[in-house]
Amino acid sequence: MRAADPVELAPGEELDPLLSDDVVLRADHVSVVYDGDNPTRAVRDVTLELRRGEVLGIAGESGCGKSTLAYALMRMLRPPARLTGGRIIFSDHVGGTPVDVMALEAEDLRHFRWRKLSMVFQSAMNALNPVTSLRKQFSDIFETHAPEMRRDDREQRSRELLEMVGIDPSRIASFPHELSGGMRQRVVIAMALALQPDVVIMDEPTTALDVVVQREILDEIERLREELGFSIVFITHDLSLLLEISDRLAVMYGGEIVEFAPSAQVARAPAHPYTLGLLESFPDMRGARRQLHGIPGSPPSLAEEVAGCAFAPRCDYAFAPCASVKPRLGERSFLAGHGAAIDVQGQRASRTWSVACHLHDPDLCPAGPPQELTGGDRAGDAETSTEEPGGVPDAICGEEE
Image (tube, rainbow, N blue to C red):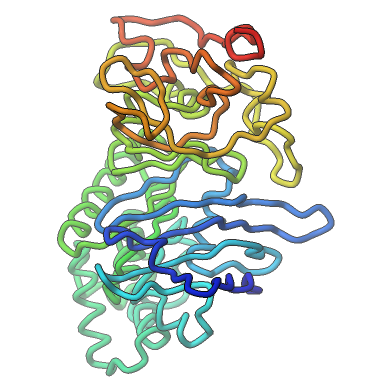
Protein backbone atom coordinates (compact mmCIF):
# COMPACT_ATOMS: atom_id res chain seq x y z
CA MET A 1 0.00 0.00 0.00
CA ARG A 2 1.13 3.49 -0.77
CA ALA A 3 0.26 5.38 2.39
CA ALA A 4 -0.54 9.05 2.54
CA ASP A 5 2.28 11.22 3.70
CA PRO A 6 2.13 11.71 7.48
CA VAL A 7 0.63 15.05 8.41
CA GLU A 8 3.33 17.42 9.59
CA LEU A 9 2.48 19.06 12.88
CA ALA A 10 3.06 22.75 13.42
CA PRO A 11 5.47 23.74 16.19
CA GLY A 12 3.82 23.07 19.50
CA GLU A 13 0.94 21.10 17.97
CA GLU A 14 0.21 17.67 19.42
CA LEU A 15 -2.01 14.77 18.48
CA ASP A 16 -3.69 14.68 21.87
CA PRO A 17 -6.29 17.40 21.21
CA LEU A 18 -7.85 15.20 18.54
CA LEU A 19 -8.89 12.64 21.14
CA SER A 20 -10.96 13.16 24.25
CA ASP A 21 -10.56 10.61 27.02
CA ASP A 22 -13.52 8.52 25.85
CA VAL A 23 -12.41 8.29 22.19
CA VAL A 24 -10.37 5.24 21.20
CA LEU A 25 -10.20 5.77 17.41
CA ARG A 26 -10.58 8.83 15.22
CA ALA A 27 -10.47 9.13 11.44
CA ASP A 28 -9.69 12.71 10.49
CA HIS A 29 -10.46 13.88 6.90
CA VAL A 30 -9.74 10.46 5.37
CA SER A 31 -9.93 10.19 1.56
CA VAL A 32 -9.35 7.13 -0.65
CA VAL A 33 -9.01 6.94 -4.44
CA TYR A 34 -8.96 3.92 -6.76
CA ASP A 35 -6.45 4.86 -9.42
CA GLY A 36 -7.06 4.19 -13.10
CA ASP A 37 -7.99 5.88 -16.36
CA ASN A 38 -11.04 7.25 -14.57
CA PRO A 39 -10.06 7.50 -10.86
CA THR A 40 -12.78 6.65 -8.36
CA ARG A 41 -12.96 8.70 -5.16
CA ALA A 42 -14.52 6.03 -2.96
CA VAL A 43 -14.07 7.85 0.37
CA ARG A 44 -14.23 11.65 0.47
CA ASP A 45 -12.99 13.65 3.44
CA VAL A 46 -14.53 11.40 6.10
CA THR A 47 -14.16 12.32 9.76
CA LEU A 48 -15.58 10.18 12.57
CA GLU A 49 -14.69 9.00 16.04
CA LEU A 50 -15.30 5.80 18.00
CA ARG A 51 -15.80 5.92 21.76
CA ARG A 52 -14.62 3.31 24.22
CA GLY A 53 -17.01 0.38 24.55
CA GLU A 54 -19.54 1.65 22.01
CA VAL A 55 -20.96 0.20 18.82
CA LEU A 56 -20.65 2.69 15.97
CA GLY A 57 -22.80 1.76 13.00
CA ILE A 58 -21.97 2.78 9.43
CA ALA A 59 -24.93 2.47 7.06
CA GLY A 60 -25.54 3.14 3.39
CA GLU A 61 -26.37 1.53 0.08
CA SER A 62 -23.87 -0.67 -1.74
CA GLY A 63 -21.16 1.37 -3.42
CA CYS A 64 -21.16 4.27 -0.95
CA GLY A 65 -17.63 3.60 0.37
CA LYS A 66 -18.32 1.73 3.62
CA SER A 67 -15.97 -1.22 3.11
CA THR A 68 -13.26 0.97 1.58
CA LEU A 69 -13.37 3.12 4.71
CA ALA A 70 -13.01 -0.01 6.85
CA TYR A 71 -9.91 -1.13 4.96
CA ALA A 72 -8.49 2.38 5.22
CA LEU A 73 -8.92 2.32 9.01
CA MET A 74 -7.06 -1.00 9.09
CA ARG A 75 -4.42 0.24 6.62
CA MET A 76 -5.18 -2.77 4.47
CA LEU A 77 -5.79 -0.98 1.17
CA ARG A 78 -4.10 -2.52 -1.84
CA PRO A 79 -3.48 -1.02 -5.30
CA PRO A 80 -5.24 0.45 -7.12
CA ALA A 81 -6.73 1.78 -3.85
CA ARG A 82 -4.72 4.62 -2.33
CA LEU A 83 -5.24 6.74 0.74
CA THR A 84 -4.76 10.30 -0.47
CA GLY A 85 -5.39 12.32 2.65
CA GLY A 86 -6.21 12.38 6.33
CA ARG A 87 -4.90 10.61 9.39
CA ILE A 88 -6.09 7.91 11.75
CA ILE A 89 -5.41 8.33 15.46
CA PHE A 90 -5.68 5.55 18.06
CA SER A 91 -5.48 5.65 21.86
CA ASP A 92 -5.79 2.37 23.74
CA HIS A 93 -6.50 3.75 27.20
CA VAL A 94 -7.52 6.92 28.97
CA GLY A 95 -4.50 9.20 29.28
CA GLY A 96 -2.48 7.08 26.87
CA THR A 97 -0.28 8.49 24.14
CA PRO A 98 -2.20 8.70 20.84
CA VAL A 99 -0.75 6.69 17.95
CA ASP A 100 -0.74 8.02 14.39
CA VAL A 101 -1.66 4.79 12.56
CA MET A 102 -0.58 6.21 9.20
CA ALA A 103 2.95 6.74 10.51
CA LEU A 104 3.47 3.10 11.60
CA GLU A 105 6.18 1.23 9.71
CA ALA A 106 5.81 -2.41 8.62
CA GLU A 107 6.82 -4.18 11.83
CA ASP A 108 5.04 -1.72 14.09
CA LEU A 109 1.91 -1.99 11.94
CA ARG A 110 2.00 -5.79 12.09
CA HIS A 111 2.29 -5.61 15.86
CA PHE A 112 -0.55 -3.05 16.01
CA ARG A 113 -3.03 -5.08 13.98
CA TRP A 114 -5.00 -7.68 15.88
CA ARG A 115 -3.54 -6.49 19.21
CA LYS A 116 -5.18 -3.07 19.01
CA LEU A 117 -7.37 -3.10 15.91
CA SER A 118 -8.79 -6.15 14.16
CA MET A 119 -11.42 -6.92 11.54
CA VAL A 120 -14.21 -9.38 10.80
CA PHE A 121 -14.18 -9.60 7.02
CA GLN A 122 -17.22 -9.69 4.78
CA SER A 123 -18.37 -13.24 3.89
CA ALA A 124 -16.90 -15.82 6.26
CA MET A 125 -16.50 -18.46 3.54
CA ASN A 126 -14.26 -16.12 1.56
CA ALA A 127 -12.39 -14.93 4.65
CA LEU A 128 -11.38 -18.48 5.63
CA ASN A 129 -8.91 -20.55 3.62
CA PRO A 130 -10.94 -23.54 2.34
CA VAL A 131 -7.96 -25.92 2.21
CA THR A 132 -6.48 -25.10 5.62
CA SER A 133 -7.67 -26.38 9.00
CA LEU A 134 -8.90 -24.00 11.68
CA ARG A 135 -5.86 -24.92 13.77
CA LYS A 136 -3.50 -23.70 11.06
CA GLN A 137 -5.49 -20.52 10.43
CA PHE A 138 -5.47 -19.59 14.12
CA SER A 139 -1.77 -20.41 14.25
CA ASP A 140 -1.12 -18.08 11.30
CA ILE A 141 -2.61 -15.17 13.27
CA PHE A 142 -0.35 -15.80 16.24
CA GLU A 143 2.75 -16.38 14.10
CA THR A 144 2.17 -13.08 12.28
CA HIS A 145 1.02 -10.78 15.07
CA ALA A 146 2.37 -12.50 18.23
CA PRO A 147 5.45 -14.47 17.14
CA GLU A 148 6.66 -14.69 20.73
CA MET A 149 3.86 -17.15 21.61
CA ARG A 150 4.90 -20.79 22.03
CA ARG A 151 3.22 -23.53 20.02
CA ASP A 152 1.45 -25.02 23.05
CA ASP A 153 0.13 -21.59 24.01
CA ARG A 154 -1.19 -21.05 20.48
CA GLU A 155 -3.04 -24.35 20.58
CA GLN A 156 -4.54 -23.60 23.98
CA ARG A 157 -5.59 -20.09 23.00
CA SER A 158 -7.16 -21.34 19.75
CA ARG A 159 -9.28 -23.83 21.65
CA GLU A 160 -10.28 -21.18 24.18
CA LEU A 161 -11.40 -18.89 21.38
CA LEU A 162 -13.57 -21.57 19.77
CA GLU A 163 -15.18 -22.35 23.10
CA MET A 164 -15.72 -18.64 23.74
CA VAL A 165 -17.88 -18.33 20.61
CA GLY A 166 -19.83 -21.52 21.30
CA ILE A 167 -17.96 -24.03 19.14
CA ASP A 168 -16.65 -27.34 20.48
CA PRO A 169 -12.83 -27.00 20.76
CA SER A 170 -12.47 -30.41 19.15
CA ARG A 171 -13.54 -28.80 15.85
CA ILE A 172 -10.13 -27.11 15.67
CA ALA A 173 -9.04 -29.80 13.20
CA SER A 174 -12.01 -29.10 10.91
CA PHE A 175 -11.92 -27.33 7.57
CA PRO A 176 -14.24 -24.41 6.73
CA HIS A 177 -16.44 -26.45 4.38
CA GLU A 178 -17.23 -28.80 7.25
CA LEU A 179 -18.88 -26.01 9.23
CA SER A 180 -22.28 -24.39 8.86
CA GLY A 181 -22.55 -20.74 7.81
CA GLY A 182 -23.20 -19.64 11.37
CA MET A 183 -20.24 -21.63 12.69
CA ARG A 184 -17.94 -20.14 10.06
CA GLN A 185 -19.04 -16.66 11.09
CA ARG A 186 -18.33 -17.48 14.75
CA VAL A 187 -14.85 -18.70 13.77
CA VAL A 188 -14.11 -15.43 11.96
CA ILE A 189 -15.26 -13.47 15.02
CA ALA A 190 -13.07 -15.65 17.27
CA MET A 191 -10.08 -14.96 15.02
CA ALA A 192 -10.69 -11.22 15.24
CA LEU A 193 -10.64 -11.47 19.04
CA ALA A 194 -7.56 -13.70 19.17
CA LEU A 195 -5.28 -11.05 20.70
CA GLN A 196 -7.94 -9.14 22.64
CA PRO A 197 -8.01 -5.95 20.54
CA ASP A 198 -9.49 -2.67 21.72
CA VAL A 199 -11.41 -2.14 18.47
CA VAL A 200 -13.05 -4.63 16.11
CA ILE A 201 -14.27 -3.55 12.66
CA MET A 202 -17.10 -5.78 11.44
CA ASP A 203 -17.83 -5.55 7.72
CA GLU A 204 -21.26 -7.05 6.97
CA PRO A 205 -20.77 -9.85 9.55
CA THR A 206 -24.30 -11.22 9.19
CA THR A 207 -24.78 -10.95 5.42
CA ALA A 208 -26.14 -14.12 3.73
CA LEU A 209 -27.17 -15.65 7.08
CA ASP A 210 -30.81 -16.50 7.74
CA VAL A 211 -32.58 -14.35 10.32
CA VAL A 212 -32.39 -16.96 13.09
CA VAL A 213 -28.63 -17.43 12.73
CA GLN A 214 -28.23 -13.68 12.31
CA ARG A 215 -29.89 -13.13 15.69
CA GLU A 216 -27.64 -15.74 17.29
CA ILE A 217 -24.53 -14.04 15.89
CA LEU A 218 -25.69 -10.59 17.02
CA ASP A 219 -26.40 -11.88 20.53
CA GLU A 220 -22.96 -13.49 20.57
CA ILE A 221 -21.29 -10.23 19.50
CA GLU A 222 -23.11 -8.28 22.20
CA ARG A 223 -22.21 -10.85 24.87
CA LEU A 224 -18.54 -10.76 23.90
CA ARG A 225 -18.48 -6.96 23.82
CA GLU A 226 -19.91 -6.74 27.33
CA GLU A 227 -17.53 -9.43 28.56
CA LEU A 228 -14.33 -8.16 26.91
CA GLY A 229 -15.06 -4.43 26.64
CA PHE A 230 -13.95 -3.79 23.06
CA SER A 231 -15.43 -1.15 20.76
CA ILE A 232 -17.09 -2.04 17.45
CA VAL A 233 -17.39 -0.38 14.07
CA PHE A 234 -20.33 -2.27 12.55
CA ILE A 235 -20.78 -1.83 8.80
CA THR A 236 -23.91 -2.90 6.94
CA HIS A 237 -26.49 -1.75 4.41
CA ASP A 238 -29.21 -2.89 6.84
CA LEU A 239 -30.20 0.30 8.65
CA SER A 240 -32.91 -1.44 10.68
CA LEU A 241 -30.26 -3.73 12.14
CA LEU A 242 -27.97 -0.86 13.07
CA LEU A 243 -30.76 1.05 14.77
CA GLU A 244 -31.17 -1.94 17.07
CA ILE A 245 -27.56 -2.67 17.99
CA SER A 246 -25.52 0.54 17.59
CA ASP A 247 -25.05 3.43 20.00
CA ARG A 248 -24.31 5.99 17.29
CA LEU A 249 -24.84 5.92 13.57
CA ALA A 250 -22.93 7.33 10.60
CA VAL A 251 -24.90 7.36 7.35
CA MET A 252 -22.73 7.34 4.19
CA TYR A 253 -23.74 8.41 0.71
CA GLY A 254 -21.52 9.00 -2.30
CA GLY A 255 -18.33 8.34 -0.29
CA GLU A 256 -19.23 10.91 2.38
CA ILE A 257 -20.91 10.93 5.77
CA VAL A 258 -24.18 12.83 5.47
CA GLU A 259 -25.48 12.27 9.00
CA PHE A 260 -23.79 11.32 12.27
CA ALA A 261 -25.92 11.00 15.40
CA PRO A 262 -27.11 8.79 18.27
CA SER A 263 -28.97 5.84 16.76
CA ALA A 264 -32.07 6.09 18.92
CA GLN A 265 -32.56 9.69 17.88
CA VAL A 266 -32.01 8.93 14.19
CA ALA A 267 -34.67 6.22 14.37
CA ARG A 268 -37.14 8.68 15.84
CA ALA A 269 -36.11 11.87 14.07
CA PRO A 270 -33.67 11.79 11.10
CA ALA A 271 -32.20 15.08 9.93
CA HIS A 272 -31.10 14.15 6.38
CA PRO A 273 -33.53 13.29 3.54
CA TYR A 274 -31.43 10.23 2.61
CA THR A 275 -31.67 8.84 6.14
CA LEU A 276 -35.40 9.49 6.11
CA GLY A 277 -35.65 7.65 2.80
CA LEU A 278 -33.85 4.64 4.24
CA LEU A 279 -36.11 4.62 7.28
CA GLU A 280 -39.23 4.82 5.12
CA SER A 281 -38.12 1.82 3.04
CA PHE A 282 -38.65 -0.83 5.73
CA PRO A 283 -41.56 -1.45 8.13
CA ASP A 284 -41.51 -0.55 11.80
CA MET A 285 -42.32 -3.81 13.55
CA ARG A 286 -43.36 -2.08 16.77
CA GLY A 287 -44.82 1.19 15.47
CA ALA A 288 -47.88 2.15 13.49
CA ARG A 289 -48.61 0.77 10.06
CA ARG A 290 -47.48 3.01 7.23
CA GLN A 291 -46.92 3.00 3.50
CA LEU A 292 -43.36 2.02 2.54
CA HIS A 293 -41.47 4.28 0.13
CA GLY A 294 -38.34 3.33 -1.77
CA ILE A 295 -35.71 5.86 -2.83
CA PRO A 296 -35.93 6.39 -6.61
CA GLY A 297 -32.80 6.26 -8.76
CA SER A 298 -29.33 4.94 -7.94
CA PRO A 299 -26.33 6.21 -5.96
CA PRO A 300 -23.95 8.45 -7.94
CA SER A 301 -20.85 7.17 -9.67
CA LEU A 302 -17.88 7.78 -7.39
CA ALA A 303 -15.75 8.37 -10.47
CA GLU A 304 -17.60 11.60 -11.16
CA GLU A 305 -17.44 14.93 -9.39
CA VAL A 306 -20.70 16.43 -8.16
CA ALA A 307 -20.95 20.20 -7.99
CA GLY A 308 -23.65 20.31 -5.33
CA CYS A 309 -25.31 17.72 -3.14
CA ALA A 310 -24.77 14.15 -4.39
CA PHE A 311 -28.24 13.14 -3.21
CA ALA A 312 -30.07 16.01 -4.91
CA PRO A 313 -31.19 14.06 -8.04
CA ARG A 314 -33.01 11.55 -5.79
CA CYS A 315 -34.21 13.96 -3.12
CA ASP A 316 -37.86 15.01 -2.70
CA TYR A 317 -36.71 18.06 -0.75
CA ALA A 318 -34.10 19.41 -3.18
CA PHE A 319 -34.17 23.14 -3.93
CA ALA A 320 -32.02 25.48 -6.03
CA PRO A 321 -28.72 25.55 -4.04
CA CYS A 322 -28.61 21.74 -3.88
CA ALA A 323 -27.55 21.56 -7.53
CA SER A 324 -24.54 23.84 -7.21
CA VAL A 325 -23.51 24.31 -3.55
CA LYS A 326 -21.75 21.48 -1.72
CA PRO A 327 -23.34 20.86 1.70
CA ARG A 328 -20.91 20.74 4.63
CA LEU A 329 -21.19 18.24 7.46
CA GLY A 330 -21.78 20.45 10.48
CA GLU A 331 -23.16 20.12 13.97
CA ARG A 332 -26.79 20.92 14.53
CA SER A 333 -28.94 20.77 17.63
CA PHE A 334 -32.66 20.67 18.16
CA LEU A 335 -34.64 22.57 20.71
CA ALA A 336 -36.13 20.38 23.37
CA GLY A 337 -39.87 20.56 23.20
CA HIS A 338 -40.74 21.73 19.71
CA GLY A 339 -37.90 20.40 17.53
CA ALA A 340 -36.83 23.59 15.75
CA ALA A 341 -33.27 23.44 14.45
CA ILE A 342 -30.80 25.85 16.08
CA ASP A 343 -27.08 26.35 16.16
CA VAL A 344 -25.12 24.26 18.69
CA GLN A 345 -24.32 27.37 20.74
CA GLY A 346 -28.04 28.13 21.21
CA GLN A 347 -29.63 27.81 24.62
CA ARG A 348 -31.82 24.84 25.53
CA ALA A 349 -30.07 22.85 22.80
CA SER A 350 -30.19 19.09 23.06
CA ARG A 351 -29.57 15.95 20.98
CA THR A 352 -26.63 17.41 19.05
CA TRP A 353 -25.68 15.63 15.86
CA SER A 354 -24.01 16.36 12.52
CA VAL A 355 -25.80 16.58 9.18
CA ALA A 356 -24.77 17.69 5.68
CA CYS A 357 -27.93 19.22 4.23
CA HIS A 358 -28.83 22.72 3.05
CA LEU A 359 -32.23 22.42 4.70
CA HIS A 360 -30.42 22.98 8.01
CA ASP A 361 -28.41 25.97 6.76
CA PRO A 362 -30.15 29.15 7.96
CA ASP A 363 -28.45 31.20 5.24
CA LEU A 364 -29.86 29.03 2.45
CA CYS A 365 -33.08 27.93 4.10
CA PRO A 366 -34.20 30.60 6.61
CA ALA A 367 -37.48 28.84 7.35
CA GLY A 368 -35.66 25.66 8.36
CA PRO A 369 -36.33 22.06 7.28
CA PRO A 370 -39.77 20.47 7.06
CA GLN A 371 -41.23 19.02 10.25
CA GLU A 372 -40.15 15.42 9.55
CA LEU A 373 -36.49 16.53 9.34
CA THR A 374 -36.36 18.89 12.33
CA GLY A 375 -35.70 16.42 15.11
CA GLY A 376 -39.31 15.98 16.09
CA ASP A 377 -41.37 12.83 15.65
CA ARG A 378 -41.48 11.53 12.11
CA ALA A 379 -44.57 12.09 10.03
CA GLY A 380 -46.84 9.09 9.82
CA ASP A 381 -47.21 8.36 13.53
CA ALA A 382 -50.93 8.06 13.01
CA GLU A 383 -52.39 4.57 12.94
CA THR A 384 -51.99 4.37 9.19
CA SER A 385 -50.11 6.71 6.87
CA THR A 386 -50.22 6.44 3.09
CA GLU A 387 -48.97 9.90 2.14
CA GLU A 388 -46.09 10.30 -0.27
CA PRO A 389 -43.03 12.21 0.98
CA GLY A 390 -43.44 15.93 0.41
CA GLY A 391 -41.11 18.45 -1.14
CA VAL A 392 -39.89 21.87 -0.07
CA PRO A 393 -40.68 24.70 -2.50
CA ASP A 394 -37.94 27.15 -3.38
CA ALA A 395 -40.12 29.93 -1.99
CA ILE A 396 -39.50 28.52 1.51
CA CYS A 397 -35.80 27.71 1.26
CA GLY A 398 -34.70 29.90 -1.64
CA GLU A 399 -33.94 33.58 -1.81
CA GLU A 400 -37.56 34.49 -1.23
CA GLU A 401 -39.02 34.10 2.20
